[in-house]
Amino acid sequence: MDTESDTPSVDGRVFTSTSNTTDGDVGGETYFWFDQSDDVVHARYEGGAVRLGHLVGRHLGETLDFRYTHLTEGGETATGHSIDRIEWLEDGRLRLHEEWEWDSKPGSGTSVLEELTEDEYQLLKHRR
View 1 (cartoon, one colour):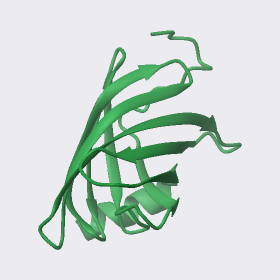
View 2 (cartoon, one colour):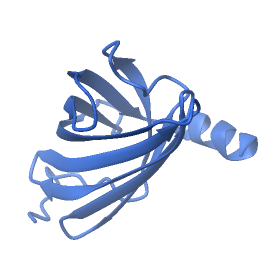
View 3 (cartoon, rainbow, N blue to C red):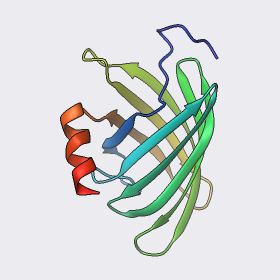
């Protein structure tokens, strides 16, 4: 992996969904906790319609390529694939532009995940 500053790591960053296609299960109450080691990326996510989810994949320059699986609050399992384009925000946070597709059922879409601000992160820590 390129370690230059223009290739941001997602390690230790927390994101939430700011938009999603109607076929998606992730929403504004879903939070993603990312870890990264070299080009390996994984995250745990939960909240809203998602009881528990995991993703695993690779950091490939300006994109993330991963598979995800989760359990919904309704008791259904779901799996899929996503390619995320990484965008730097002016304040130093990251935004992920996702193109995703279900493996476990019909459907595909787009969504946006945005890194929490420090204040949002502190509020989330106190809620957990």
